[in-house]
Amino acid sequence: MRKIYSSKTPLQKWLAVNSNSPNFGEALRTLLGHAWVGIFRRALAKNPPFSPEKAISMATQLPKEVLPDRFFDWISEPLLYAEAIVSFCENSELVNVSSFLLSSMTEKKTLNLRGVRCPLNAIRAKVVLQGLSPDEELEILLDDGAPIENVPQALVAEGHLMLLREKKDDYWFLRVRKRGNTK
Image (tube, rainbow, N blue to C red; front, side):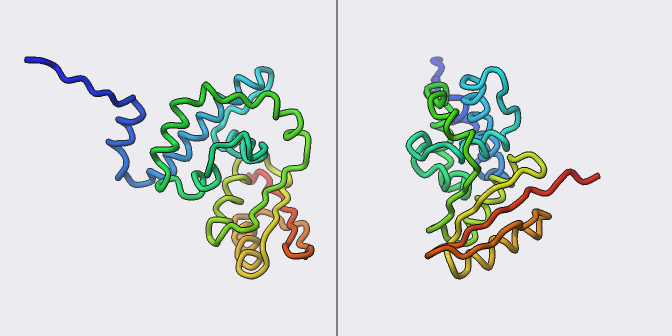
Protein backbone atom coordinates (compact mmCIF):
# COMPACT_ATOMS: atom_id res chain seq x y z
CA MET A 1 0.00 0.00 0.00
CA ARG A 2 1.30 3.41 -0.99
CA LYS A 3 1.15 6.36 1.38
CA ILE A 4 -0.41 9.51 0.03
CA TYR A 5 1.29 12.62 1.29
CA SER A 6 -0.54 15.86 1.62
CA SER A 7 0.90 18.90 -0.07
CA LYS A 8 -0.67 21.14 2.57
CA THR A 9 1.57 23.07 4.90
CA PRO A 10 1.16 22.69 8.69
CA LEU A 11 -0.72 26.00 8.88
CA GLN A 12 -3.02 25.00 6.03
CA LYS A 13 -3.79 21.76 7.90
CA TRP A 14 -4.42 23.76 11.08
CA LEU A 15 -6.78 26.01 9.14
CA ALA A 16 -8.71 23.06 7.71
CA VAL A 17 -9.08 21.36 11.09
CA ASN A 18 -9.93 24.42 13.19
CA SER A 19 -11.88 26.73 10.88
CA ASN A 20 -15.21 25.96 12.57
CA SER A 21 -13.91 26.23 16.12
CA PRO A 22 -15.35 28.82 18.47
CA ASN A 23 -13.13 31.90 18.78
CA PHE A 24 -11.32 30.97 15.57
CA GLY A 25 -11.27 34.61 14.50
CA GLU A 26 -9.32 35.49 17.63
CA ALA A 27 -6.94 32.57 16.95
CA LEU A 28 -6.31 33.92 13.44
CA ARG A 29 -5.65 37.40 14.82
CA THR A 30 -3.18 35.90 17.33
CA LEU A 31 -1.47 33.92 14.56
CA LEU A 32 -1.13 37.12 12.54
CA GLY A 33 0.29 38.85 15.61
CA HIS A 34 2.91 36.13 16.06
CA ALA A 35 3.98 36.57 12.43
CA TRP A 36 4.44 40.30 13.08
CA VAL A 37 6.40 39.52 16.27
CA GLY A 38 8.84 37.57 14.06
CA ILE A 39 9.01 40.37 11.50
CA PHE A 40 9.76 42.96 14.18
CA ARG A 41 12.28 40.70 15.95
CA ARG A 42 14.30 40.57 12.74
CA ALA A 43 14.03 44.34 12.28
CA LEU A 44 14.40 45.43 15.92
CA ALA A 45 16.94 43.03 17.36
CA LYS A 46 17.59 45.19 20.44
CA ASN A 47 14.02 45.89 21.53
CA PRO A 48 11.41 43.81 19.68
CA PRO A 49 7.79 43.42 20.79
CA PHE A 50 7.04 40.13 22.49
CA SER A 51 3.25 40.12 22.40
CA PRO A 52 1.11 39.56 19.30
CA GLU A 53 -1.13 42.44 20.35
CA LYS A 54 1.79 44.88 20.55
CA ALA A 55 3.16 43.66 17.21
CA ILE A 56 -0.19 44.18 15.42
CA SER A 57 -0.49 47.62 16.99
CA MET A 58 3.00 48.49 15.76
CA ALA A 59 2.19 47.13 12.28
CA THR A 60 -0.80 49.47 12.00
CA GLN A 61 1.61 52.39 12.26
CA LEU A 62 3.66 51.30 9.23
CA PRO A 63 3.11 52.94 5.83
CA LYS A 64 0.37 51.27 3.78
CA GLU A 65 2.81 50.18 1.06
CA VAL A 66 4.55 47.90 3.59
CA LEU A 67 1.36 46.20 4.77
CA PRO A 68 -0.36 43.36 2.95
CA ASP A 69 -3.41 44.29 0.89
CA ARG A 70 -6.52 44.39 3.09
CA PHE A 71 -4.45 44.16 6.29
CA PHE A 72 -6.93 46.23 8.26
CA ASP A 73 -9.76 44.01 7.02
CA TRP A 74 -7.78 41.00 8.25
CA ILE A 75 -7.66 42.32 11.80
CA SER A 76 -11.30 43.47 11.72
CA GLU A 77 -12.81 40.38 10.11
CA PRO A 78 -10.22 37.59 10.26
CA LEU A 79 -12.66 34.79 9.42
CA LEU A 80 -13.28 36.27 5.96
CA TYR A 81 -9.55 36.35 5.22
CA ALA A 82 -8.34 33.16 6.91
CA GLU A 83 -6.52 31.78 3.86
CA ALA A 84 -4.79 35.10 3.16
CA ILE A 85 -3.71 35.38 6.81
CA VAL A 86 -2.29 31.85 6.77
CA SER A 87 -0.47 32.51 3.49
CA PHE A 88 1.03 35.74 4.89
CA CYS A 89 2.14 33.99 8.08
CA GLU A 90 3.79 31.20 6.10
CA ASN A 91 5.76 33.77 4.11
CA SER A 92 6.36 36.38 6.81
CA GLU A 93 10.11 35.72 6.83
CA LEU A 94 10.19 37.52 3.46
CA VAL A 95 8.78 40.73 4.95
CA ASN A 96 11.39 43.36 5.78
CA VAL A 97 10.26 46.52 7.53
CA SER A 98 13.66 47.77 8.74
CA SER A 99 13.81 50.77 6.44
CA PHE A 100 10.35 51.96 7.47
CA LEU A 101 10.66 51.62 11.24
CA LEU A 102 12.62 54.72 12.14
CA SER A 103 10.22 57.12 10.47
CA SER A 104 7.00 55.39 11.52
CA MET A 105 7.94 54.65 15.12
CA THR A 106 9.04 58.17 15.97
CA GLU A 107 5.89 59.86 14.71
CA LYS A 108 2.72 60.14 16.76
CA LYS A 109 0.51 57.09 16.56
CA THR A 110 -2.39 57.95 14.27
CA LEU A 111 -5.11 55.57 13.15
CA ASN A 112 -7.04 56.80 10.11
CA LEU A 113 -10.49 55.20 10.22
CA ARG A 114 -12.13 57.51 7.70
CA GLY A 115 -14.16 55.44 5.27
CA VAL A 116 -14.30 52.43 7.60
CA ARG A 117 -17.85 51.36 8.41
CA CYS A 118 -19.28 50.58 11.83
CA PRO A 119 -18.58 48.40 13.78
CA LEU A 120 -15.28 47.65 12.01
CA ASN A 121 -13.88 51.07 12.93
CA ALA A 122 -14.44 50.39 16.65
CA ILE A 123 -12.93 46.91 16.34
CA ARG A 124 -9.81 48.29 14.65
CA ALA A 125 -9.41 51.00 17.27
CA LYS A 126 -9.72 48.42 20.07
CA VAL A 127 -7.15 46.13 18.44
CA VAL A 128 -4.64 48.96 18.06
CA LEU A 129 -5.19 50.16 21.63
CA GLN A 130 -4.81 46.60 22.90
CA GLY A 131 -1.20 46.62 21.72
CA LEU A 132 -0.29 49.95 23.28
CA SER A 133 1.24 50.33 26.72
CA PRO A 134 -0.99 51.64 29.54
CA ASP A 135 -1.38 55.43 29.41
CA GLU A 136 -0.01 55.57 25.84
CA GLU A 137 -1.96 57.87 23.49
CA LEU A 138 -3.47 57.20 20.08
CA GLU A 139 -4.83 59.74 17.60
CA ILE A 140 -7.88 58.54 15.65
CA LEU A 141 -9.45 60.11 12.55
CA LEU A 142 -13.16 59.37 12.06
CA ASP A 143 -15.99 60.25 9.71
CA ASP A 144 -18.96 62.29 10.84
CA GLY A 145 -22.22 60.50 11.70
CA ALA A 146 -22.37 57.03 13.23
CA PRO A 147 -18.57 56.62 13.59
CA ILE A 148 -18.14 59.67 15.83
CA GLU A 149 -21.10 58.48 17.89
CA ASN A 150 -20.09 54.81 18.23
CA VAL A 151 -16.29 54.62 18.36
CA PRO A 152 -15.71 57.00 21.32
CA GLN A 153 -18.55 55.32 23.20
CA ALA A 154 -17.05 51.85 22.64
CA LEU A 155 -13.58 52.98 23.73
CA VAL A 156 -14.80 54.78 26.85
CA ALA A 157 -16.88 51.69 27.75
CA GLU A 158 -13.59 49.74 27.79
CA GLY A 159 -12.07 52.25 30.20
CA HIS A 160 -9.99 54.34 27.80
CA LEU A 161 -9.87 58.10 28.33
CA MET A 162 -11.05 60.48 25.61
CA LEU A 163 -8.59 63.41 25.80
CA LEU A 164 -9.71 65.36 22.76
CA ARG A 165 -12.63 65.25 20.35
CA GLU A 166 -12.35 67.92 17.68
CA LYS A 167 -14.22 68.52 14.44
CA LYS A 168 -11.88 69.18 11.51
CA ASP A 169 -12.99 70.03 7.95
CA ASP A 170 -14.83 66.86 6.94
CA TYR A 171 -13.78 64.48 9.72
CA TRP A 172 -13.25 64.17 13.48
CA PHE A 173 -9.93 64.06 15.33
CA LEU A 174 -9.75 62.11 18.59
CA ARG A 175 -6.92 61.68 21.06
CA VAL A 176 -7.39 58.66 23.29
CA ARG A 177 -5.28 57.49 26.22
CA LYS A 178 -5.21 53.75 26.80
CA ARG A 179 -6.50 52.85 30.21
CA GLY A 180 -3.79 52.46 32.82
CA ASN A 181 -3.03 49.30 34.74
CA THR A 182 -5.80 48.36 37.15
CA LYS A 183 -4.93 46.72 40.41
